[in-house]
Length: 115
Image (cartoon, rainbow, N blue to C red; front, side, top):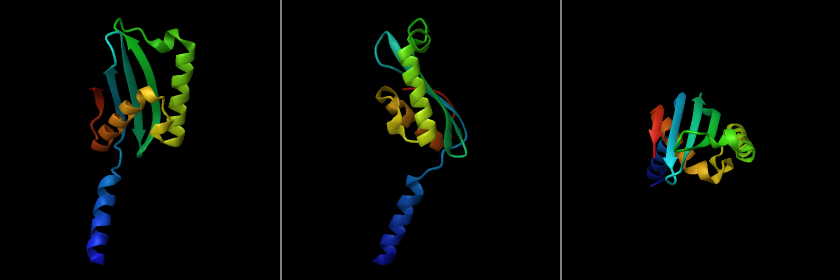
């Protein structure tokens, strides 16, 4: 019985801690007909070393270029994510997208993705 429990624990450990593959991963998600959220992360040696958060309207204009408070909040989230490697430190609007991109990084699926 102890051997079975040990084997089960080892199996779960191996598959629950997938290593993120180096690369650049980005995704966008439409929240309404006017704006979409965009997230880009850069991964190196199993760590997120860069992150960008933005919103764009349907004309392609970035909210971070027009609203200082949003830009500051997005930059702060980026710094927090890189320093802590914790998705919970990200602006709630972008958490789902970051989790999605981490899954892509675990699978090595670099590039642009839509949600």
